[in-house]
Image (cartoon, rainbow, N blue to C red):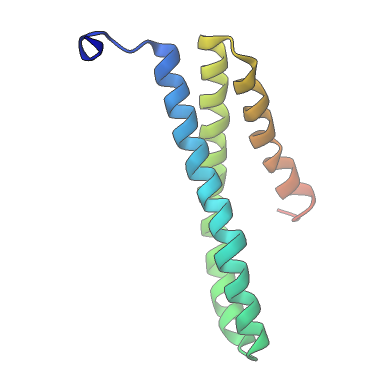
Length: 109
């Protein structure tokens, strides 16, 4: 039966890479579709002071979390590629890695 057979390291690494990439994608989607819209509504309602108080706390914490999530995602994608030799993992890991230079140079972090 399927349950009695061990899962290979390649399959486990692919499952982990998929899960961590899902966390990164979810976090980025939340920022794009919830946080940004919330900030725009606050500005539209003349409540810039709320953003001035929240953003200096929110940005460093969000940035630190994303550095860890993106780093882990790139690492798990590299491991999935190494164990499976499926180049799709190398490509998707490379795209995730590209978030770091974007954040550094475009967002000035």
